[in-house]
Length: 173
Image: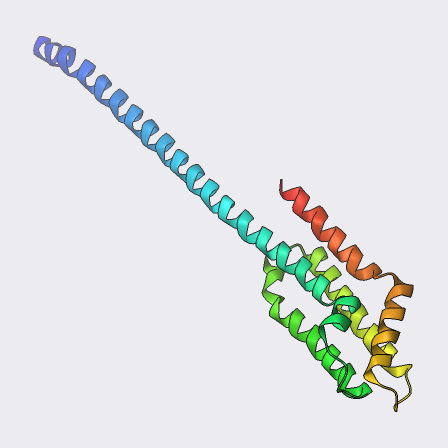
């Protein structure tokens, strides 16, 4: 029995030291793993914010490009009839929108709904301005009617969408 106590006297402190060392190493490795996970999350977050900001920029650009004033300025109506001009305006709005469809991944559902609503409002304004003009009128008449309708409407949907997008961007910071 004395031999057992003698062995225990030497091995018990060694086992306790070994257990303490294992626990300390395990705690250290866990803390380092957590630090590296947080650091990598921070890098991902920075990249994500940059991508989201670019998406918001693209959406504002889309909204500006489909505004009736910009459409009328960008699309030459001199050699088109009313129907051709209307189709060209509608095609331009749809192409701009389709070109930016992927941006919806990076914005809230509400912001994307506002963008879609603004697009639909512009399409309705184009159709209404073409409908209100006699068939034998020039494309310039459609352009003038579109600008007139836009002045009456005050570009509300586009302005509202841009304001909403700006508000979302401010929430990122």
